[in-house]
Image (cartoon, rainbow, N blue to C red; front, side):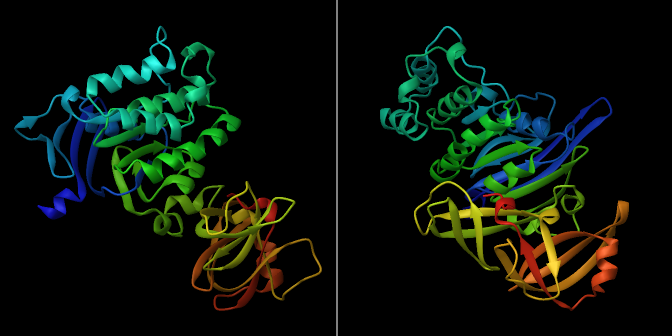
Length: 357
């Protein structure tokens, strides 16, 4: 029983025309599980089935030891302690922000402290008197997040909450999602098809294709594997855990990683703050020797592991820098010019402005 209390047990089947959902998952209750895959692969359907919003879905759902669905049992959707946020905020237009928050909060019978906590952490105090039509898209999603959290849910389901926002609004709300990831204390299932959101938010990663689970595991392990479809995308790369060392007057962060010290531009953080860095393969160049006479600030010694041919005359190079996997994408001509072979010692070069923090 102790094991079940520490997992989300999901086994769901759903047939709708030619589409079939077939999902068997055992997920950790700690942290954020991101469900990633192309549009139409069944990500949103999976979340709706967990929430009880797909009556035709059969199978089982057990959340931290609490049974929500079994072959002969089905807890109605309104009795499942779910907080859910969709692509569009779906706020009640006739109520203020405060009214929207208190509506769900009162129905759930949650504590006043919980309501105050999420108003503060999502910085909603200046918005409380406003109506939804006067808010930006990012502000509406922050309110929708808080509305879901103040009901004291057992699980938080986020269905592409940033997909309707432009790039600027997405960048504004991502730090708030990181706050939720850090402070909510409940399992979070997050659906997206954006690699940036996976890199920033995922503790555990589920890959979906055509209604089926193709891979599942710790996020950094899957993101850094070279044998999965993620490694073949144009924006392929790796994600590294990092810790802030310091930040200079020009906004350049010095970051400690297992691969070595890296420099990247980013917002101010106190020393010791944990971050994630995303390094795209196309932003990595390779050299046979160390060069200190260029503008490149990030220079790491590495060993070439594998070479994989890609369409269009490109080659994907997998490297290890102090045991940490890195990817580079180079032309076939560069491969021949440098005479690259597995086992060679190389220098990895990365522009500081290219690192995604």
